[in-house]
Image 1 (cartoon, rainbow, N blue to C red):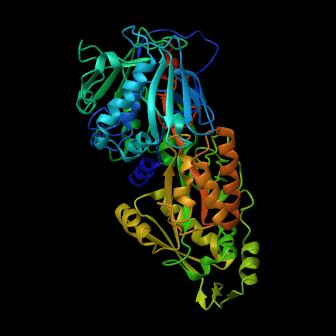
Image 2: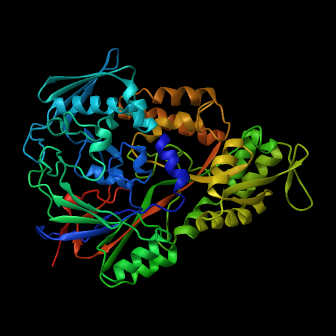
Length: 550
């Protein structure tokens, strides 16, 4: 979650990826060919465990293709077994996970993947713990011991129950290839066996070469152990050049036929329409993992009236979230949906619309304000406790979608008797100064759900004294549920607890969910089986199933 929040602060444009199932049909997939994919900025190096490789997610995307993990993100934005066929856990001390590694799983050189590879991975990461991301060090600290029961069975003992346990061992590395090597230096430019110099991995594609400043080329793994080997011979990942207007750059490449699939690009409505006019290009879109919302400041630094729940509810009723979603992204989908949860994305199987009661009802907003003793002034704005209900709405001024949102909110709140005063700042000012100081009434920004485990970290956002609790909200029962959620191992039970907490958040309104920014993909119609059922933002999701039609 900490890494996700850092990314959210740095990336305030829409993150775009492949969605839907474009070009699929009843045809038999063909083998061969190369697909060129456009993406974000080039990373400093490939090893996704090292902060010095950069905060860009591309290093993780590159590493994920050759190096699979115990679990992977599947449809419904939930975990599915990957290198393992199943895993069992105990609910009482010692908290033990038992992984059953797939019998067929093997490395690209034919060596079986065993429990010793998992043990080696854990020990290799511990050896460079000081160089890892904070979140990775925290996960290492949760593990008490890792041991091989037999060749295909692994036992992991945790120090405490940990809801994010399925995200452990997200990249398992080969013991026979890296024994005696320093993980912090060996895989900076490629993923290979240092003893042979050959690419190595467990996924459908291997890293063939990296041409700095240009591309990374992946080649089919001939010994991939999954349901089938990849259909394509190669995938070429092309990095942005100027990295200023990613949408314009990749539209140019698609028009010039220098790109087959545009992923992770930021598009405006007119750019999407431009893509749809390109002959032979398919454009797909759906809500993605970038969640836009308002945090409401309760207490010091915020408007005194916002300390009252009914006033916050009035603000929620006075904002037409449906109209905002349609105004911002109606060019993508005339019925573009809003978000009605503060813990789960709409693509999650656990999503429940706990906030659906808040639709635009300015009369209800006025009723709630008057119930609290607020009186409407001559200018139509309510005065509560002697203070005019004029609220500072803060956001980043370089994001046109957010600027447009605040302009819409201004007009929507006025009939409710509330004045919205937009305050625009630089990213640094908003995230490093205003959020930290609490000097705002409402602030508009995004969080990014990087994995299905992200909701388990909601205590940091909404719990009393949470590390990222910008609102100052503190409710004992919600905090209890969210603290408990960190330690629930069963996925269904975790979802029930989080949705119960979300229902209470909807009553207390320390936050107002807005929408999930769209994932958008544009690709040539000859590229088949493009899919992103997970609603994650990895441009290579399902890449082993891509194929090229004539």
